[in-house]
Image (cartoon, rainbow, N blue to C red; front, side):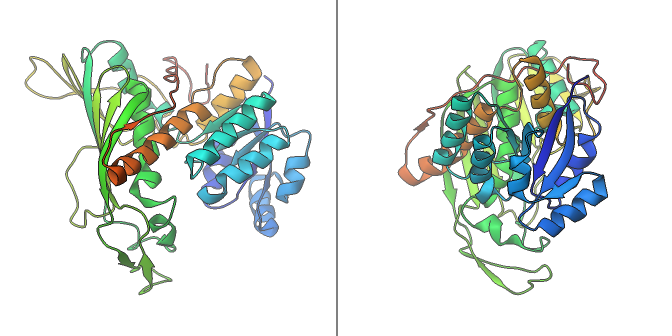
Length: 366
């Protein structure tokens, strides 16, 4: 079948899995990569048998139809805009942009040029979340009433070699991990109509205890403990806790969805597989549910491949820019609600992503 030729911009650690899976999925072929550090791009290119070049050279290549943007979050919007101006479809790592204004500019430029924008996370296309979606749509827990989601840890300064970003604008637990949880919840329950919450900076300064920056101090600029409430447009009420401040660990589940006929235990949305369990009304215990879908291993990049298939076929793509912008707005909404003491009314909406068909091979998308 035809394949969309793809160039990767940003050749840091995360690029490896995109190169690996770019060879597996139908519909796309990674042919080049670029980085501000051209020598790093060429080294990565040699590792995976593609062409390494500058960002300018990649964007000027008429054969490249789509760009996968793996730069740092602060550069997401600017690189997306450059790619769109060059006439390329673009798929970007999460978040879509740091600010709502930047995210809007990306979507508006894409629409004006008739190009597609897609964004990570695409973990909701893995076997774990897709199985949960199927159970909800099949009515196994009745009418969805609510959901809870928890991402708690003690922060990244104990293990990450350069953890400063996580405590600066665009960082924090909401912007670091919130996209995984919010995207999964929207994929299961639909778009959000309003949010509220409370947020705080628990420790104004952090001390790095990892190498090579052991002992250095980090000023905390963003909330590190956020408790949020979501009203979904379809009726369910959700609770989301994201924290870098649980220094003693936690036994909380990742996601639970509550319905009129039962409860669904949903796996970690930062992965593609995981354990799905259900407790139906009248039962005495949890039941394990075999995964109904594949892509349960590390399928990162499946969202980009799905977008490439959409470009070829004309259908809608699942990890869409509209979905990513809705998530971005909700994350800012939690912070805004806490600062202003209000409910934040969502201005955007999005379509609930279509579920993947049952029975696909891991590399198939339709």
